Length: 400
Ligand SMILES: Cc1cc2nc3c(=O)[nH]c(=O)nc-3n(C[C@H](O)[C@H](O)[C@H](O)COP(=O)(O)OP(=O)(O)OC[C@H]3O[C@@H](n4cnc5c(N)ncnc54)[C@H](O)[C@@H]3O)c2cc1C
Image (cartoon, rainbow, N blue to C red):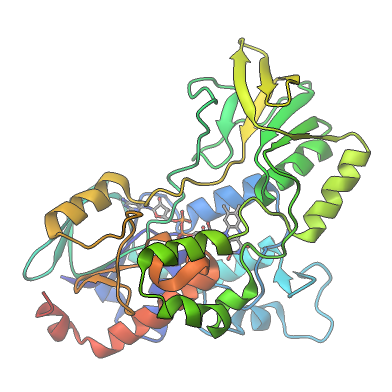
């Protein structure tokens, strides 16, 4: 039986594994990362490469290794680092540097060898441990003293109600295996969404010679980060942690997130592209989409109609609790506590049950608005390292 089974091999799952091995004193043969992709971090790499982003939105201390300065050291801690490795402000690493550093973390801790390729279908918590039924891997069940649900929201792109689901020319940019890029001769393309990914995709299309119609329900909102940096420490988190009402915590998260915002540099680039006519701004919501095999006609709330050859949805991820039937089955069978918003009620150890821990969006009511981000993975890592250090496997065995 494993000590730790981490379900999900994305940013969160990989970082938690690195921390358990690097700081928690857990032996590698006692850990498994279960994820259906061929490679760890596949969703991260697919989503980030689709957007065309050159640099992360977050600062260089937010990465997947144990030591906060690891990424800086990896880049070669010189006074004048290679141009382009970091962007101002806040030393935001280039995507290439961040990804190379992720590779380094994976190889340093031998995480590839701990990766079981499969999809968890059911989690059963028993007296002696947790059994996870798996599709796509042999053996078809894995057993562990503890599981960490690191499922992310990557499997649930937000799909607006008006957008036809079965039309090849309408695609969500974060759908696995996204293949919606226009052919060179297709001129007008709609990009729907008002956030950083929508902006970056519009710019990518413009750079390839297309006219990008950027459709956003609100004006361009500029924020450096997707929540105020005060949420990284006690400035805002003190108040959040003292708040006993989970409904009010949910409201605080909703208010803190700068959803649909772009950093100032992306805003500037968009303004320039708009001035050149490469990006056309539509502040509206789409009411209907009329489709024919080659063309889509979008009718906006402003009354305007736009004809495009493709619609690329850059509308982010659904705010529903991640994990779908897997998590619902676990909630029902183990009677796990959920807040009114459906999200787990966990303690400071991110413990939903003595044998079930969470990270990422599932830890949001404990870790606050940064929970989904790399910084949230690091906070979860802090807490789970403490659990690992305190809980010898023998103690975990008698946890239920
Ligand atoms: C384009 C983009 C740019 C971003 N840039 C930044 C940034 O600069 N800084 C920052 O802090 N954050 C950023 N984020 C936010 C966040 O860090 C990422 O979304 C990150 O990928 C979230 O990691 P995750 O592990 O929670 O989820 P994911 O990357 O989605 O990984 C979860 C994994 O779990 C697997 N999984 C799900 N269900 C199961 C199951 N039942 N069984 C087995 N495996 C399962 C999935 O297949 C997936 O591989 C960005 C997000 C996006 C989309």
